[in-house]
Image (cartoon, rainbow, N blue to C red; front, side, top):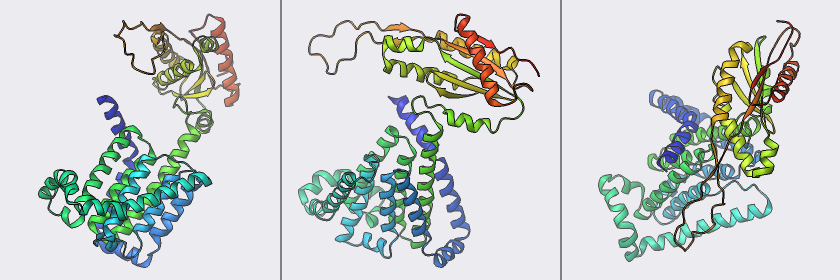
Length: 417
């Protein structure tokens, strides 16, 4: 559990590296040359709006409905007098609560597109959150027993620790922000992806905007968020186009792009899981998919400077730029041994859907199986100078490995240098 939490946080920080650098650079620029930023937004007051519009269109084209709603939400923040509305009593409480609830809803939900049904559901949800913010939460805030039970224990120590909070939030708002923060942390660990990263950073930025209450900072932060939203969509789309969805390694399309960067010297290794069809027929496609993931994870860690790609089915390709077969074979032998020696534990019985009421029985032993892979190696020569020709030679070598009993490495017999 602890390891998975650390992995989720690590992946989130990796995704958030570009936005954090962007914000840090903008902060440095604003700190050293505030007049430059002020003059930029005075001369170009529509910059944040145009940036959000572009980000919203790109998000809509790629089906990122949550990011489209986020752009609309941020567009409301940069409207004239928006900050003064948030900071006044009465309606301000409802508006501030509505913004926090909207961010929470976006972090909690998934991209659903803009079909008539999903659009109607989203609009109904937004209306419901608005009614809760304007009517229900102010009633709770004004109800004395609710304040004593729900608000005081959780917020009084924060107000005493940081008195300035009382200038920005009521007790109800602060409790709502705390709950929303817990939700953000949970989904950072549970869904460490670029869209979730963008939503969490936008939520934190909104809290900064409402606390700082400066129009220039407001427009600067929202403009940066528009760039981050666009970055998130492009990064996700790139991953979908160039990464294999099942195994997570680069796909065949990424391989074709890699080919364009290869010089005159390179080695290609074709790999195939032995008896994979029989394994699938025996244990089922779900187990077969797990084996594909396992083999892909091992191949992605191949040493010697190789780059692994899923070519299709159970076939993988490893590209070694600036290497000859003699330099490559020891690394391929090492990865072949790692795959062959790895024990795969299969459940002899499926996990029960519900916990049995009877006394626990002795756990059934898991069945241990192994898989092996065969490898064919070929390199670019004068006779085989184009990539497709080298691939064909590697495929011939792979066929020889299959004929030789599988679970081995064969180097193509190529003429030329």
